[in-house]
Length: 221
Image 1 (cartoon, helix red, strand yellow):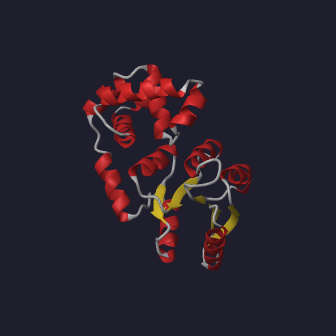
Image 2: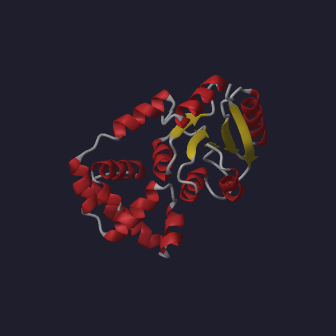
Image 3: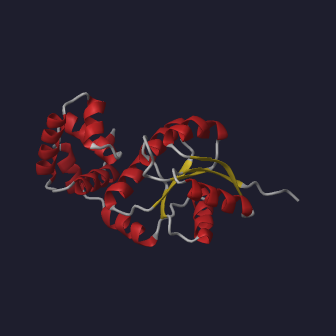
């Protein structure tokens, strides 16, 4: 009889206790194998492409590179890699930034261990597992609107650049460095974008941007 291949997994979390606990649990579960556990995004980015796991469990709040930024860079190196955020954060900013970066799932660390195994299996079968109330936020946000697409097209090319980086989880300071602009200039762009999009927060701006992208792929081309 042919032996079923185990699902291979890597873990990225700066809490040693959590890393070891999840790794031990995965290695003790039939059909799952942890290939490596890393403390930082920088370590993960160096090692994971060579290990070539099927799934990465990624924390968000890491020292140095954030988990969201690490997911984006890993997906650029290994496009087929399935990344699931495993975090304590459930606010909209972080959820949408992670999904925009390429994450396929989003679970809270309070998720029961058996549910984590089911979610990993689900993701390797093409699913996008999420905690139920997080899934509800996503469903409510991704209601495609032609009006949102039209609003985004009113932004200047530079404003769309700034918004794209916001959607990827960059802070204002990181955006300024990425575009070689001053913080004052970035804040000016942000105010202009908020006015044109009729929003009052980063989250609302990112939701409208992702919504418009779903409606019209040219928005992010």
